Amino acid sequence: MKKYVFVVYTRPTEGKESEFNQWYNERHLPDVLNLPGFVSAHRFKYVDVPSTNPSSHPYLALYMVETDDILSAQAALQAAAGTSAMVLSDALDLATTQATYFESLES
Image 1 (cartoon, rainbow, N blue to C red):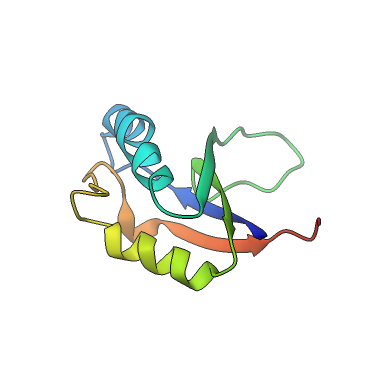
Image 2: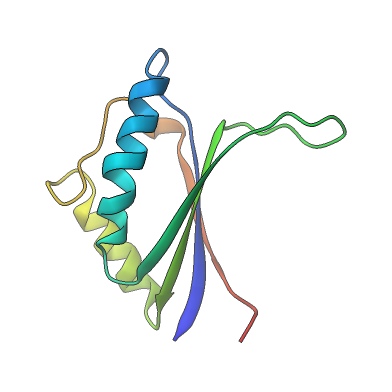
């Protein structure tokens, strides 16, 4: 089975950072992990360190995905988004969210 990391950069809606973090940790992560192929998730907050490139997004989520069909895993994610299986929050600035997959080079 192939392994992937799904990298998601996010930002909260202005004035809703606390609500954003609560929703992300308590609702969104479990919803995503209920989808086929999504096996773990980790969240991070940007730290401004001199001599490194600044981030355009304050939050990062890394999802580990194990599947032989990454297109089906992504289709399941898209189909669930905005339904009772994956409730979205207005605390997420969806318009600025960036997401991409990377395939593991390790065997």
